[in-house]
Each structure stands twice: as structure tokens, then as C-alpha cells.
Length: 115
Image 1 (cartoon, rainbow, N blue to C red):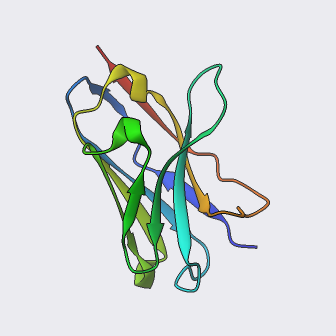
Image 2: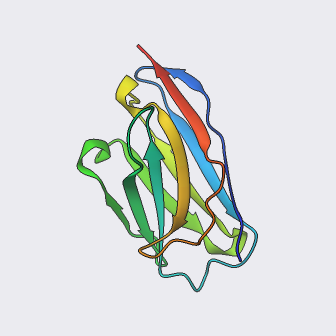
Image 3: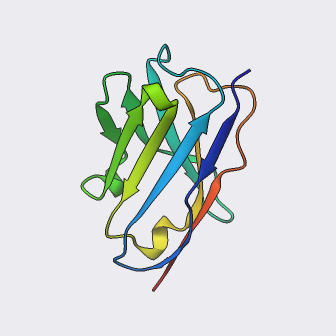
């Protein structure tokens, strides 16, 4: 079972930028699609972005044009560059494979955007 460790979350001001990472304990090169999800307080976990093995990204409408997803298969890591962050982006961010996630999720990384 691959373990996932998210990192890089922080408190930032609205309009700021942040890059978060997700490191896998095993190879992700054979996983066609990896995904970033987020869960805001009191809300269900939602899909934010997908990245294919070739590095192509697909984005949820609310983050399109502001977030960029990437992956480094050789490093078993995926990234999420987040620009022009807004208070509504405040959430715990998680990664996993898509569409069928691993059974166990990482602890996530907290992103807090102040207005």
C-alpha cells in the first residue's frame, strides 16, 4: 500500500501564492491519474485537480486559471501551485490516485487564506 504525505500548507494572505506537495512512498509512474482534493471545515471533500501521467491537468471550475497541478514521476511526487489564493480556498488539501483512491488517505496539509 502506497503511503501519501502532503506538505507545504501555510497561512497566507488573500492574493498570495503557495505550492504544496504530495510525496508517495512508492512509484507513481504507473498510476495514470493522480488527484488533489480539499476539505473545508464543515464541508465534504471535493476534487480540485487531476494530473495525468503525461502531466496534463484538469481543474475544478473554481480554481481554473489560478491553480496548476504537476507531477514528477521520478520523485514520486505531485505538486499544486496555487496563485491568487482566496479565503474560500481555505481547506485541508489531500492527494490520492483517481478515480479509485488508495484505501488510506494521508493527513493532508492545511492551507489557510486570510482576508
